[in-house]
Image 1 (cartoon, helix red, strand yellow):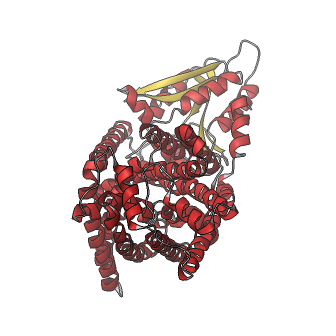
Image 2: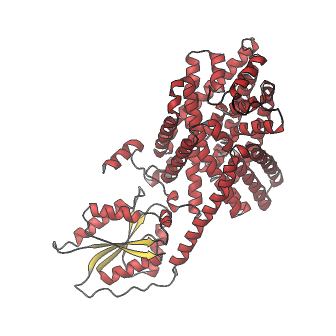
Length: 626
């Protein structure tokens, strides 16, 4: 192995065979830790963002924290009830993209896919930024290196996810349960202290003084009005952003998948409602004030209840870890969503490929790069990210629930009316919330999401247009026998191996070239474990029965290793003297525009380099111009 391969194996582990895919599933406890971390961790900043916005109206606005929290909890229960139905209706994964596409049409599906893609990137950025904020609250001296710490956190979470489902679940489960225990302890201790009269509220005059000092030199305090309350509500709605994660990943549960997914969803929502309500009630009781980039609300609450001792340290450590882990929810779902879009031709096909550890590695790399870039742009600030957050997810909520109404209407099985009613109510409420989010956040950054969604949809459609054009250009009749030129006369020609992935015009031209120059011709196809090898073998025997076909098994989904090993054996068999050669022919696409190369696997480049390194002297490519 090269040094790069050795380093990669040390960091993410040895490759897993495709046969182990069914073993890479979550237990209910692991699923709660991995898929619920985004939603559960939001209690670390959701109440804080409500208080931060209400603080713009002065101390008199802070009592609205509890009513707003109550509305968000009610919304949470409605959305969760809707997604319980989605999980059962789509037991292989009922994310907004699939539900919207199948029931509302392609455009609705792409809007949902674009909305969720943006929100997953924001999930990573917000979670990491909030986690580092928890660290810098406890160790203020680290505030100067906030952005490098954010990037380091993204790198660590990326590496953990590249190790695979089982490895990441074992590694990342503990922080979720540690955080849940710490917050529940905080809430219980806080209510006990309140009952004993030991959690006295901050005086109103002191609240007002702190708020005026925090807003001095900026826009100053604002009047309490509908727009301010809508902004506070929309900021608190960040608590709902992780609810869809479970319905996206039903296929990652152990059997019975949909039943286990529903159980985890119920536990997650109940814990989320309990912790969120408790923190808001205690924050309101204590009259806490939050300053942008200052100590977090959870830290202030922990300091008031636990004091400056080991429990406060444990709370901050658990908060840091859960917020970093919350990014893992996006790492669990974004690669799956990208794979669905890629399978349908709306994103590069490379995003469908499973990596060495049976995860969608290319999707993980893409998510890390986008989140890292966003963190650099906003200087690692949570408050600059929050206005962008939740808009996309509520658009996808609405489309998904509306799609479920159409689904039940088409199905019309027993009890379909009650299920359609639940999803219809969910769609109506989330649509109203989406409008509130857009109105209240538009000038504060939500316009970026509004512009980005149609741009992404246009990009998806442009990619699909390219793939459709390529498919038309490559299409061959799949029934009639294909004609190849005559082979060279006896004694002439070169023993030749042709790599074939699919039977289309590109591979046919490569076969024509090889047949006209080959004394001994063999075609090689690699079975990557996608279930297509047998159908390909049947098509080959029907259309090219005169050309021998070797199907190479690749249990680790590698193209390079099986081909290189076969070519090595082929050269040994046909090696007569030092003047004899064997030839390897590789079909390649030649795109019209350079950017289109990104939409096609560059496997030919890697394969040609590997063959050269192993001593193959004649490797030629036959270009097919698209």
